[in-house]
Length: 224
Ligand SMILES: N[C@@H](CCC(=O)N[C@@H](CS)C(=O)NCC(=O)O)C(=O)O
Image 1 (cartoon, rainbow, N blue to C red):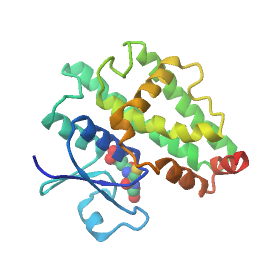
Image 2: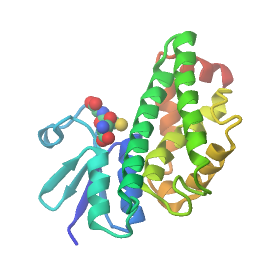
Image 3: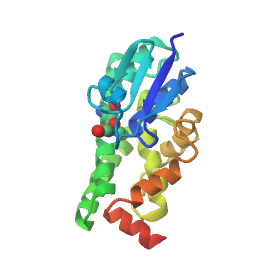
């Protein structure tokens, strides 16, 4: 098997998608951490959008988490996308919802005013309502039923943010959403999800959130 290197950042949720997928496929890989605030020349030379993750596979460099996860799924067992084309298209679409939710989460933790903070939380709640309805289509514990999929790999990093948010704000994002709550719990227990971040991830995320001039950071200071 070819050597794989995941070019990473400790807090990036898109990197986590690739790390989870690699772990589900039981592929050994190394990580190379990039300082995104001071991108090294070797990185900007090989990353067309200047973003992580990158996956180096032998001499090739893959970029964009969806392309990376699709590549891994097409080449390595077990398959994490459904075999049925309609189901697969739906899964790809829900992965886009995970990305849109990450954008809402970014707005949530960067909002400087209470009003924009509340708007971001409302956008998250709307997506979580849609997910709660979608989850009624199958029994859990995962998005598509009993089998872990790439949608699970995409939403696990979304839910991981809330482990920190839970400590500081009564955001209510999981209130009245029992299927979403159960799904979040199942993902948090999955070994590939647990292994996708380093043990110091919660402390690093906490510090990253606190140092911003944001409404959330002020709430975190008040809660301390
Ligand atoms: N669409 C990309 C998003 C990746 C992304 O936004 N990565 C962030 C870190 S989480 C990044 O590298 N940002 C650096 C920059 O934009 O300069 C993917 O799915 O891989």
